[in-house]
Image (cartoon, rainbow, N blue to C red; front, side, top):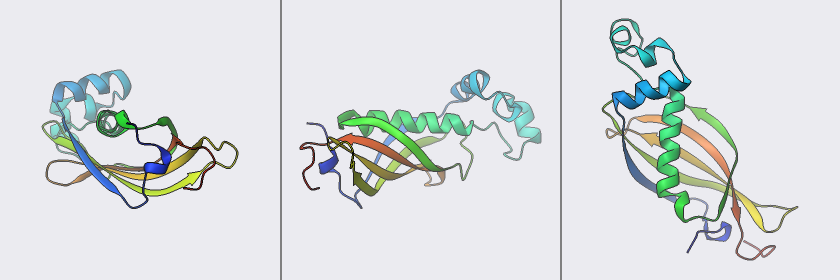
Length: 153
């Protein structure tokens, strides 16, 4: 049974997922979408970059995060998708060989005043590697369907 707006509780937190970052994936994503040399040239990245190694694009980290969210969080929700993302940050680079996981904490929920069949849920998403080092933080605002439109939450 899907999770609806009314089923979400402010303050609840959920951790999940396991995504192995590979050099081949880092290179393929970078070549297609963010072809900066520190994402596409392993030797030059090792020798010249601030990272000291090939690093995944932040947008690739966001995409891997989204994969984990869809597979482990949104698969069983009555979500209509996000209406926006606030405070997107990449506090540390993501490297090939790391394994990522995600934590979602519910910050607030707001029923729609104009459309009583839905409401928004703001969360804090943190993507970390296996050592607990944060790689991405963001605050998505997601639109959820309601069980009973217009009823108090």
